[in-house]
Length: 356
Image (cartoon, rainbow, N blue to C red; front, side):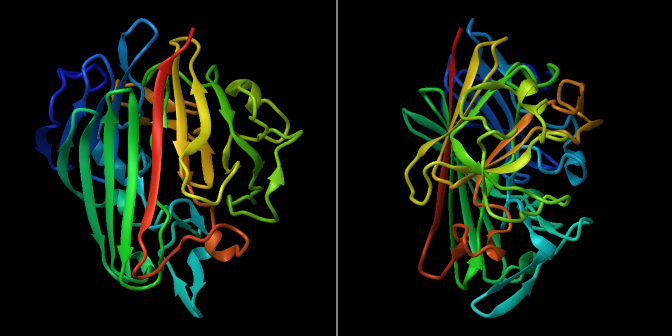
């Protein structure tokens, strides 16, 4: 069966598919609703089948045809990234008077947790099933000094499909020493279907009055700026192709949007993505203060997707709910510090519907 076709799953408890060298594969969902496939390599969302306006499902998540490719250009596709999602400048930060140096990539900065971040690990998994929710609970232990981060960290991620067409990611972590934690899922979406061209005709709205300007290395500089009058004003739905044609959009978005409001643990709307061609609509709700939007402007066709289609610029969009980039070095940003006795908690819900 081609990976991009709808799997033969009719509901019930999650099913563990035959394992591969890349780890376990789980499939779960509800009849006539969402069906998800999760891999334990990187706690990875590998597929998500969503009905269109006619009730016909299609896989809307990008993933490499060969999971071995996750070691290079496709390593973050659908994965749980950490300990720190996004960038920490020069791989350095100080905490309680102690300076730490992290594993860095070719850029010289620490991206998504370092050279061997959580996306490279095999997570433990168990199934979860209730009348209203079904999915998997994934666990990882990150030892003290992992990629340079202090403290032993125990991380749990639940990926659950709801009967009402919701996909929920819930994150929890505890530590035995002060450390940094900032987790997200790095899925790329195309609501017309994986391999069905680009997302330039999708409409996007973001509930953010400010964004984070960045330098050439995508490291924040200066204060957060108002989106008013800029290429980053998405407070009303706008066709992505039109948004990226605005002056200042450059090669596309790879920017943090400061969500309004922020600062508490309330689940609130961050963005809405809509594909007029299929009617599929995805509402993003989160407890996180920021949303990193990446429109895949650097995709060059080197990654072959599940459908056999090379992924080129704009093949998908990542909507990464998280804390702000380089916040350990920016005292005015929300803190990502976790201390012993406290628990890191974060939740993001993707709510699917159809329109038009």
